[in-house]
Figure 1 (cartoon, protein in one colour):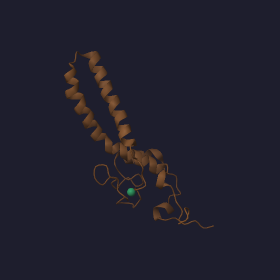
Figure 2: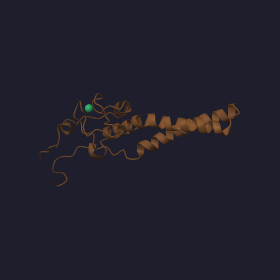
Figure 3: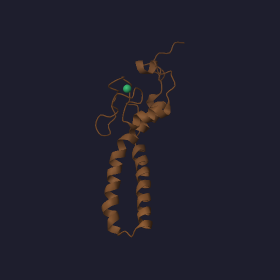
Figure 4: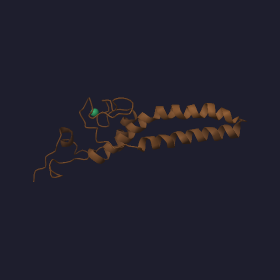
Length: 141
Ligand SMILES: [Zn+2]
């Protein structure tokens, strides 16, 4: 039986996709396959295809996971900083309002793109969702 694939990138995807390199490329907001093409078109909109290698990127299903991961990371940083200041110094409560709230907003904004890129890279490397090879006709089409 002959199996055909619906794109050039899927034909050559019999190789193993390394997870950590794909995550690192995503952290740099680059295509998880080639590491050169830009992953995003806008702030958080993922390109449908890589402008450099043509890899299809529209299969990602990052959804709410990047904000969740960002909140966990930023939350730990903020809580650690607050606990440290609370134990080391005598801090007024309004100080936290004027420092930690902007810090949380700025850190979250800065981390969202790399975290989403890493998650798209993770999905790509593990062939999750549409990143898996799909032979033409496998779904009856
Ligand atoms: Zn690429």
